Length: 202
Image 1 (cartoon, rainbow, N blue to C red):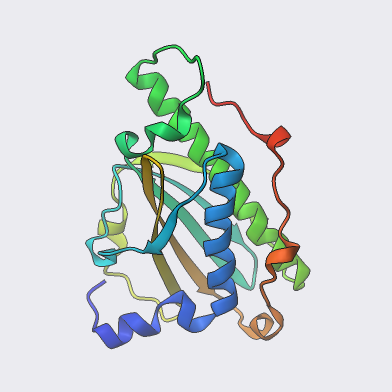
Image 2 (image 1 turned 90 degrees about the vertical axis):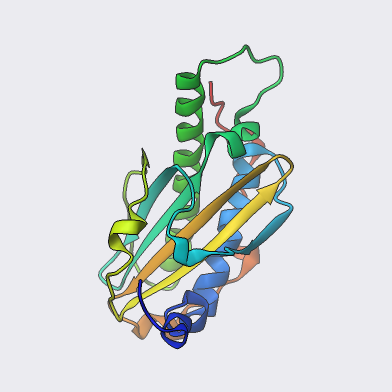
């Protein structure tokens, strides 16, 4: 995305909808703890969002309605996230098994984040559907980074804990903005995923 610093500032999600920005950031942190039982120790703005390379692997999921389209991605390397799939007394796994388990974890993580976003949109009267999550390797941001759409707003951040770190990005396309005036993020309304709902990633 070749643009001036002033334009980039205008395209940041937190400058367009602080409530939606807070919601997505909160869910990205809470759902990781819910699914992995590992606390997030820091969540910070990405240091180099313009690099458009955030990890060798990624998952993507989309929340979409006629009012808004939200694309949420998690970007990671296997080395920096391997701690998340470790289980007590687990046998040694092959590289292929590690890749599958990590993809499974992050796809379910994407589902939980997208479900929380959809829940909050529904509470505002915005009926949104959720796509199936996809996992892949590569850096598609390098291909799409020069596209400019005035209704698109972005956020880039990193999530870190004990022996793990990965990045998240989101692109929000506002197709109709009338609902934004009544949209408010209330942390107390977020459903916590109980430990009984944890998924075992073999």
